[in-house]
Length: 208
Image 1 (spheres, rainbow, N blue to C red):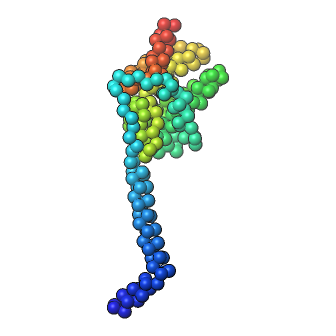
Image 2: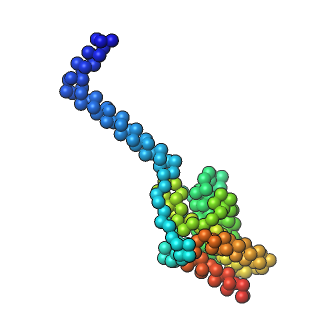
Image 3: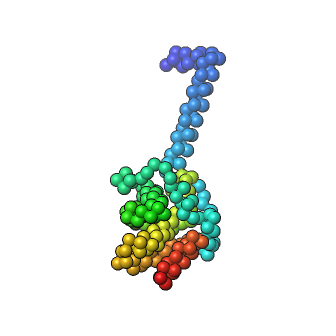
């Protein structure tokens, strides 16, 4: 045993080997630190989200449909591949974006199908997170505008126009009822100028 200790001491006394030994210790230490940071990030170390007064109305410039769509671009989410709430939320936004595009082009039947898919995705989200948040940590430092109720309300508002175009007046009353319900749920937790625009849209459609 003493011979072994003496042997290691003699090796470490050599300048080249001593530097190598110190380098190994530093590398192990840094690797452990990096692993710890990765674990914290993976398990949801959250970047603080700015809080707002209860009655604060978020301006349209800060929260709007275009921003929500841009935040959720990327690899297309399919229902069979969605595994997290964030996947379902992204899927709901992506389907809504496609429905909006088709609606503008007057492709009513195709738009109807994508609005339906968007609603299904967002319903899954609301089973786990029933409240809207202006900004929400999805994971780590990834913060997004999180308004599943408001997106649902906007979907049903757009469907009012779509149903009138394709002669499905039988579905208009139900769509308005659902839309106004989700709008009221959104207003319970977040107020935005976008919300007020949607509210005016329902009020205007009710007078037609």
